[in-house]
Length: 324
Image (cartoon, rainbow, N blue to C red; front, side):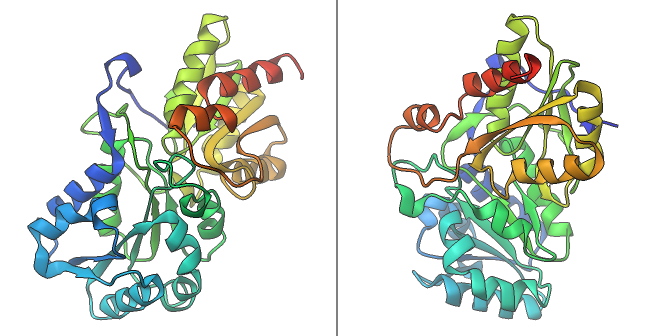
C-alpha cells in the first residue's frame, strides 16, 4: 500500500498559513485539555510565536533566556515530575547548541519532551547561515528513540501536535517561518510513521517532506502539462519511516525523486536511498541542499540558487524518465 491516500485542497484554492502561528495557537488549544503542558522559551517567543501561549497561560510559560543547554535541563527535570515540556527555539539552536544536553538528559532516559525547531531549513527570513539549519533531520534521525516530524502545512501541524501530546517519549518537530499553502483538509488525521499519498501516478514518484511537499505538488502539475504522471508521497514522519509506502511508490514508478529543504546527506533523500538500496534498488535523484551552507536572501532567490523550486524538482523527474 502506498501510504494513506489523502484528498487535498487544490493549490489554487489553498489558504496561506504560517506554521509558527498555528503552533502557538495549537499550544493554547492543547493547554486547555492538558494541565501538564508547559512551554519553555529561549528568548525567541515573538519569533517562534510561543508568545501566543505566553499571553494565554503566563503561569505555564518559562522564559529561560539565551541558555538553550540549561533550558533542556529544566525541561528534563519537569518531565521527570509528570509535566510535558514543549521547547521553543530555532532549529539551528536545538539541533546543535543544545545537542549534548538533549542526548544525555532527554534521549537516553527517554523523557517526554517535545523539541520544537522553528525557522528550520533555508528560508529563515534573511537570518543567514548562522540561523539556518539544514542538518537537523539528520541529527535527530540518528538519535536513538527520537521521533522526527516535519508537517507540510498548518492543518497537518495541528493534527500532529494533538498526536504528540498522546505520545510518551522524546520528539523533534520541524517548523518553518513563513506562510505556505494549506493543502490538507481541516479534518485531516495524522498518524506517526504513516506517509500520505497526495497524488497518484505511474511515470515517476516524488517523495517529499515538510513544506517542500507544496513544491513537489507544484512540480507534479508542471509534469502533467507535458504528459508525465507523477505520484507524490508526503513523508511527515522521518523517523519511524514508512518504508513500505516508499517501496510501493518505487514498485509502481521505477523512478524516485526526493525533495526536501534540508541536506540530501542524512535527510529524507538519504533515508529513501537507504530504504531502496536495502529493499528495492531504484533509479533516483535527490533534490535538496547539496552539502553546503546557506546565505541571506529573499525566499524565491534562495530557492532558485539552491535548486529547490518546483521547476527543479520537475526537471529531475524528466531527467529520470529520459534515463539521464
